[in-house]
Picture 1 (cartoon, rainbow, N blue to C red):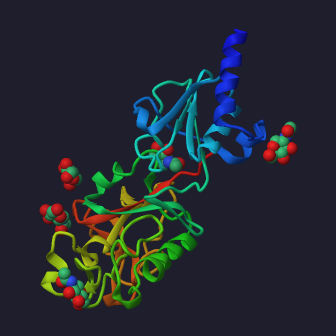
Picture 2 (cartoon, helix red, strand yellow):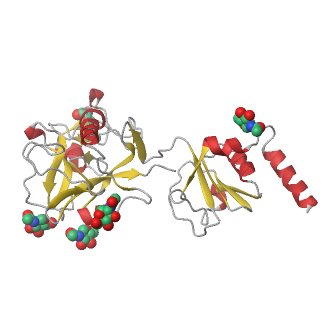
Picture 3 (cartoon, rainbow, N blue to C red):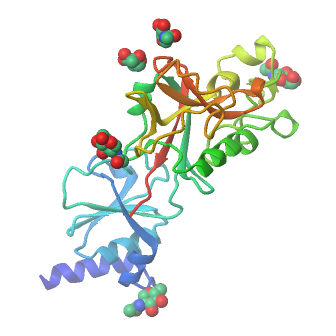
Length: 295
Ligand SMILES: *[C@@H]1O[C@H](CO)[C@@H](O)[C@H](O)[C@H]1NC(C)=O
Ligand SMILES: *[C@@H]1O[C@H](CO)[C@@H](O)[C@H](O)[C@H]1NC(C)=O
Ligand SMILES: *[C@@H]1O[C@H](CO)[C@@H](O)[C@H](O)[C@H]1NC(C)=O
Ligand SMILES: *[C@@H]1O[C@H](CO)[C@@H](O)[C@H](O)[C@H]1NC(C)=O
Ligand SMILES: *[C@@H]1O[C@H](CO)[C@@H](O)[C@H](O)[C@H]1NC(C)=O
């Protein structure tokens, strides 16, 4: 027993020469999050035996890791910066608890002021029912919690995320904060990011293998918004006014032709991103996912 403790102490000392170890380290820096490290290969992790959560957290900090899991016996520290497959995955066993340190939004999610950690998934265009299950757990389709949020996201999409880029430069040399390549404005004559990373509108600009046409992929986004039994509702069951042009609708919506709605880019009506009712089976829209607040 003592030998074991002594051995552990040595291991810890080697890895961690002078880090102050106390429980406020865990409380202040780390949040419990869903996670699973059972499939992590050796190249992605540091693993050692320790009954102490605090030691595990301190080691993770020392290793400049932002994610670790502990089951009261074993500490597994993920050393990769991309946490896909580990973070947000339900743990196979209740004994495991996983911890994440800030920043709390990780690509492809990003913090959008007043809205939370959002993912603008433009790489997968799909219908509404597919979008419902497309967000990586525990994320779900985003929807506005208030009329104010409906206006905030429209403003963000129109004026911050998809405005005309400076000098027409787009692509991986000017990435967005969430890692997506810098976009072009989805309206006008230069909606395509071409192979050299310049916005243009010719066939060559729009159809090369690496070209992205933002008129297509940033045109509309599914969110948690639907007409159920004839009543427009958000996923938290708040009712949406069925009145033309009243927030969050655009000026000519809802037409009440369809039971789904998307934040739709409609510059012809000078509304930019606003809600329009759209065909639920149209598999041509992107989605906006929300990473839940981590308790
Ligand atoms: C724990 O560490 C924090 C920050 O390093 C320090 O402010 C605090 O006084 C320490 N608490 C104890 C009980 O040692
Ligand atoms: C991309 O567009 C710019 C500006 O029109 C042009 O100079 C460049 O040649 C284009 N790249 C390709 C690969 O077509
Ligand atoms: C919304 O209503 C449905 C059906 O009445 C219910 O199952 C669901 O839990 C409600 N959702 C919320 C967030 O209250
Ligand atoms: C939505 O798309 C999925 C995947 O392409 C397909 O399996 C499903 O049948 C579609 N559902 C509807 C309602 O169109
Ligand atoms: C909705 O779109 C589907 C194709 O995805 C089409 O078959 C259907 O007719 C459309 N419904 C309406 C009412 O336009």
